[in-house]
Image (cartoon, rainbow over all chains, first blue to last red):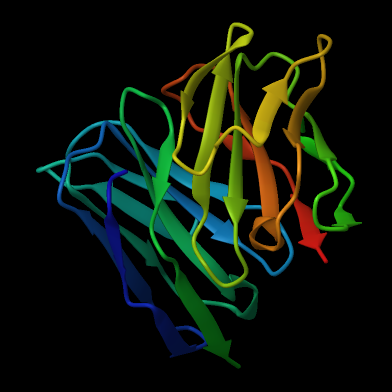
Length: 110
Length: 113
């Protein structure tokens, strides 16, 4: 399957700071999705992106579908303690299966 | 808000035993998936299912695995003879179309001893 490189692997941030993470792939995707996973829970969809260049916001979250269709980033503005968790990017082609990145673990210092 | 539900939340089984993991996808969704996540690793695709048949499966989904939609609401994953390395979180997901966002259940933690 497609390999996604997600970075950074982990980050410690101060409450109120902005967070940025990204995913890159050697091959193109038709859809990019960002999920958040809390311990022992399933991935929860944050943002879905369907068009190259698309920039979408969901509250304090902003994500973009790269123009080359091989990358995407997620920004979290003004982080709060409940932003703690693991964030996964996922890419999707016409075969509909999702290829996941390895995740970015976010820890917020109060 | 509609959600994907999975049962049981945790299953412990002896090596070599058969297990069936159950899922109830979101009711108007047509595409169903199983993924797994080994502890500390990323989520991996197992199989997709549409129109009562498998549409794609990964190399993980070997002859020991099977899926079934026995009625209009349930979607099951069966592992015929479990191995230690099958221990993982198994997530069911569903989507309304193949190219729309997939929603995940809470997962079943399978522990093979």
